[in-house]
Image 1 (cartoon, helix red, strand yellow):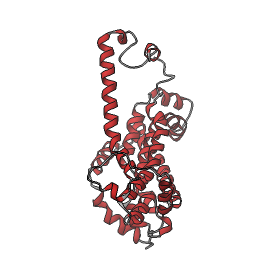
Image 2 (tube, rainbow, N blue to C red):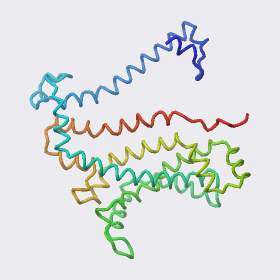
Image 3 (cartoon, rainbow, N blue to C red):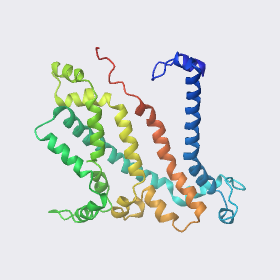
Image 4 (cartoon, rainbow, N blue to C red):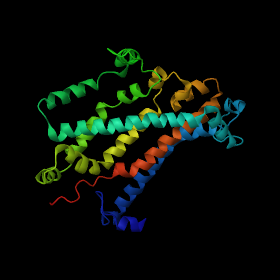
Length: 296
């Protein structure tokens, strides 16, 4: 710990500040507070996970305990088999892949247009986008369902296809705003240098903006994965074929008649991929090196 503090190069506190007793005391008090907050946040998750291994009588016992009498890891495998997690996982990944590509391409281009190109009327369009964020999702649910089940002019029913779910997430206003705010922070010297070299606007986006956008792409990836992985209403409305059921839909249709311990264990299994995706993307989310190479 002393070496880490000694060679600390970032943050408000320097290695000299850590030599003061008051700073050391405040530092360890803050660490203790953060550890306490982590314990409080993790306790419900740990309780639900361990409760999944309890028998029904033990689960409803009048003297509840955190640890079950016995833990059988085979229950995880049995729940996965009953849940048919394999096909549901593949379907959820197909849904995520389409939504991710759409949100990165559409959101990135829209954010780049709002941030750097700024065509006429962009301010009005930006205000309109902010206004649409105030509309509740339930307000558009029925019109969208009527549109996709009987598409105007061609009268095609798009149920049991991924198209309604993919296209419905492409114009996510929140992600467009994230891209715009991120592109606002990229130094103009990059764009100006690329223009002097004869690069087009689309080339600037593809060759300059996208390589520098790893932090925001990782952030959007986490948001898109969580929204698609936990999306129940969309698949429930449009995916009537049982073979196309996603993880959230499978969890609802399969486990509704299970016991409470089985439901908790199934919910924990479904939650694991979201934690893994966040762990993979967290390093990029924290990193932002767009200022590197800019002459001061």
